[in-house]
Image 1 (cartoon, rainbow, N blue to C red):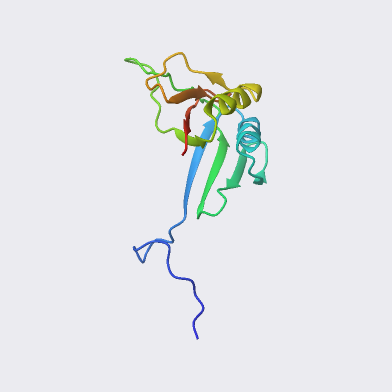
Image 2: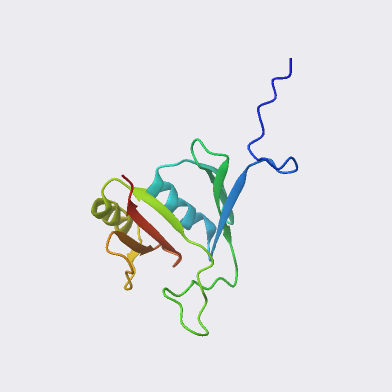
Amino acid sequence: MDETPPPLSPRPHLSGWIGTVLSAPQAQPLAHFYRDLLGWPLHADTPDWCTMQVPGAPANLAFQSEEHYAPPAWPAGPGEPHMMMHLDIGARDVATAVAAAQELGARLAEFQPQEDVRVMLDPAGHPFCLYEDR
């Protein structure tokens, strides 16, 4: 009997696994920020490359050092580096999540486009959102 688990992707050439990589001037401090913010352990933890598994999902979040890293502007204007992606992080209590993120080194973004979401900037300047996950 074949005990191969069913594929995670309906595309036979894909495994169903996905990873997201954030660049920073130094990968390790940014990885430690997200490790402490999310409470997920790091799998790889080196100065220039770190990864963490997303619990219960075929996905990970990774961090790489990039020598010429420039943080995105939020919101970006003409000629400024644009955000390529951002993380949405569900919270049971947004105000408490904001305070915890700030204690770890995040900043509240000046521009807040929604009343029920808080846009934060991580220590490398990447925007991420904290929203009430009901």
